[in-house]
Length: 317
Image (cartoon, rainbow, N blue to C red; front, side, top):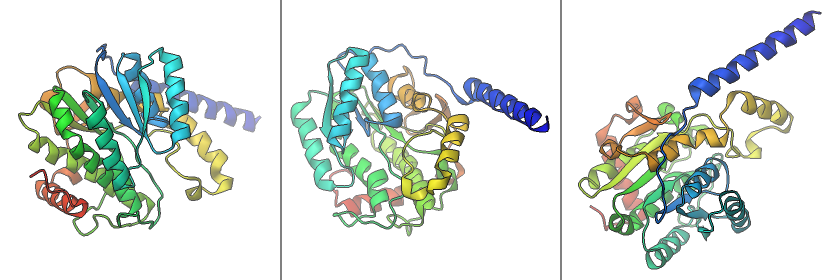
């Protein structure tokens, strides 16, 4: 009988938390903006938050470009989105953010073959890369989460400026709050979670600095925390096999699903009247005050300068 009571209590708790999550943790984007004749790029758009974001924007009539490194998964995502939205203007273009050559080829393709880019969503990211280094000599997680998106954004600035009003949306994470990022740890592996949090803070600092550079251009840039979302970003090697069932249960109960986690990305991409918030950070479809770790203009400038130096990028002052 005690066990039955315990099960009932647990079920009531889980049900209550589910309601709490639904009505407090999740805030849906209510924008009805139509995106016909607009072009959107979503990096990592084949799965998780990226897929949910691309699906919503395709529903709004946008030409959606899924920028993915895996051709098979990318094509499968394209076909699913087309089928669900009846929008035939959804395409795949191969992009590997861990390769400067791939980024440059992708940007060249876009600038030469796309008439416009109205929204760039830097969504793709990885966790658990270890100490691996890319062919470009950069730490893998750092290049995938920070250096790659920065270079991609800078290479697409000309077409974004020609398509104004346009937007850049950088998907960061609340884990930026625990970052110990400094100029010395830029491009340095400091453990799975430490490196991830550092790259996510770098996303926010990049957003702040880029917004200053883009003042008076009619190109807005935002960073955001999507919430704690159950996606496949955590690789199997981090999770012991015996813990996988427990992890799946915890994710299902306590974490947001990708559709819920995509709402702030969608908000930053679509919501009217937020252009004056360029450079700011968003959570739950609203602007929030900068994290304490992100209140350091000198660090933002130093990270910007060192990032461009490591990328050997000299075009933008």
